[in-house]
Image 1 (cartoon, rainbow, N blue to C red):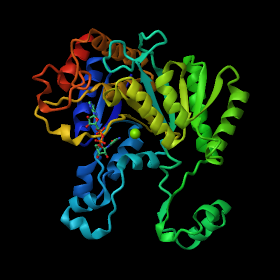
Image 2 (image 1 turned 120 degrees about the vertical axis):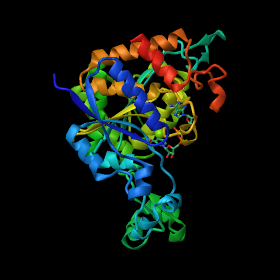
Image 3 (image 1 turned 90 degrees about the vertical axis):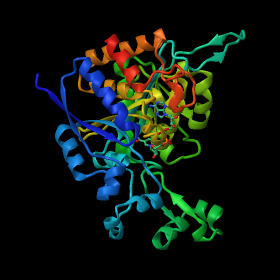
Length: 397
Ligand code: NAI
Ligand code: MG
């Protein structure tokens, strides 16, 4: 078979560190690929005024598969401050390149699995009915709509003109905000389209069907957010009834779900939600299985481009340590999701098994697994470095 080409986008901070480690593991596992470097992130904003250069988009368009580390984003003023002097008078405005990637390739489906690894000291535990300690097995996959809703970017502060006039046509606006001066109002819209809503719902049901989950839980708030959540719930009911009668559709409110996820996380399988609620519940579930060091994700869409990345950011304060201490597992797990996607499931399974063995043996643990605060001296105190953790995973392959 011809070698695959993967666009490796390290980004900033620890993104550069963990991506290198994931590629080491992929190589060691016998995955044959070439990696081309995709420029993305803060450096390119500062030097070129664009954190997502066209050449990176071209590479992804050509090769379709991206592995992404993490980027640094900073507020508007700081972004302007750090821009190269010769670019400062061009009216450039910083926007997050990862959001840009999602929009450019319409990566509307975000998948975030959260699985308990046996022996992970960060696993969630709770007290059972007899006062005993229980460690529920979490095996969920969150399907998050990735391009619309509250992150769609359609927002205003001090709405004016036709926008303000349009708001005033809504009786609830008049009733609740009609007396508030426009300059004291900010509005962020939550736009859902039928097409994208159907795509994320179907992706969730198909996954449940393919992997033997008995339920799909829609996690929104249809009783209050009647138009968007309400539309999503109605569509979920229709899809379930017509095409997935053997899979149960559960409907939970996002606030209640946040409570239930610590009470009975083992009851859930596939969850599906809009952009913001999907982001929230996936972080909530990630907390039960070890947090950011373990949370992986995939983003894909009809364009055929797919990007795999850990959920964590660039953790800038850890980036310059002489010996890196961050946990590479979230990035390596994201690489496994890539392997599944391109039908290299056997290699993915082997890597996951190696990770599971390392965690269960418990001899090598990064600082987060030892519940240490992430100071540079954690390695002296017995924590594994990023490279040591990767080495031991490779050794188990
Ligand atoms: P972060 O995820 O970078 O770090 C938060 C904390 O989580 C760290 O201080 C560290 O204690 C822990 N952590 C993160 N990754 C870890 C790992 N692999 N192993 C062990 N511990 C880990 O989030 P933060 O500090 O809010 O943001 C830092 C920068 O990253 C910001 O500029 C932010 O905009 C950006 N960011 C980028 C994302 C992306 O590229 N997809 C996502 C989230 C934040
Ligand atoms: Mg998040």
